[in-house]
Picture 1 (cartoon, rainbow, N blue to C red):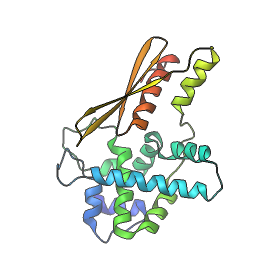
Picture 2 (cartoon, helix red, strand yellow; picture 1 turned 90 degrees about the vertical axis):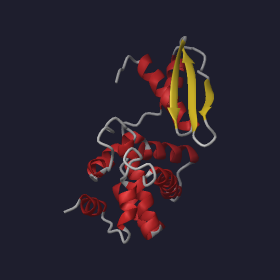
Picture 3 (cartoon, rainbow, N blue to C red; picture 1 turned 90 degrees about the horizontal axis):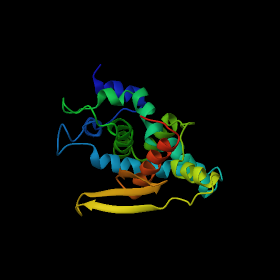
Amino acid sequence: MSDLSKVEKACGYAFKNKELLRKALTLSSYDNAFNNESMECLGDALLTFIVAEKYYGENLSEGEITEKKQEILSDEALRPVSERLGLGEALIRDKGDSCNKKSVPSAYEAVTAAIYLDGGIEAARRFALSTLTPNPNAINYVAAVQELMQATGESLPEYKKLLGGTPQKPEHRVEVTVRGRTYCGEGENFSVAKKQAARRAYEELIGKRD
């Protein structure tokens, strides 16, 4: 059985256009023109909508929906889902590309987009709702840092947005200073960068190291 067939079986979806699945699993390190980067973006938006729609239908509040999205759609939550479906192993990448930690959870986003393009929103919704699982250990690092500061009567941290790169490929960075030390985060948008900066600050504060 080919890798694509294995992925189809694991995902419970048979593609009419197999090239969509192949593209969803191809990294830019392998092919700069035919890769999954734009599919990741589309899949991220689709998953946000699908999850928000699900919990809106359950009458959750805005804050509760936001927390659910964090639990279910964070990289920490999507990584084991991708691995369980065999997406990490099926990725088509350059031989020297082995350090891209984002590629495995992003593969799930790209495959969701591929299913949507091949079979429509209902197919994408069925796939997502049948495979996504909440990460019970997901931490809201921004809130966690704030709680640590409040517990000791210290001033709440302020996050500084920095934008670099080019208009075509912007680089979003956020800095936060806590107890005299500055922590930086980077990401595809300021929200992701802020969470990364907060995570680094939090793990330093509690003495955790990667």
